[in-house]
Image (cartoon, rainbow, N blue to C red; front, side):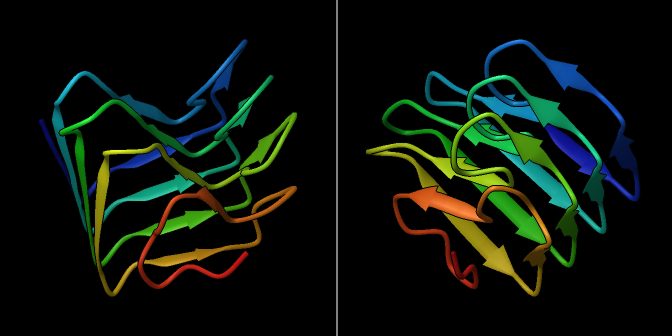
Length: 108
């Protein structure tokens, strides 16, 4: 799925992925997108990317001010999943921006 020039904001998930979930080997691409002010009860108020083979592509997008009950508030990248970050800003998420696996361009 590709999301182009869109904003996903002010959504709530009881468990994971308040803004978006990509799972089971899916491919999710954000092109010039914004994910902000989303929340999740457990992990990833912004984006929850899980299961081996799942690919999340962030092209010139913004993941900001998302919250979750446990780290991260921004982008969760599970084992065996991949995040490709092309000039995307991931910041101001709580309690942290990204975890547990590598999310290029993201700090804490």
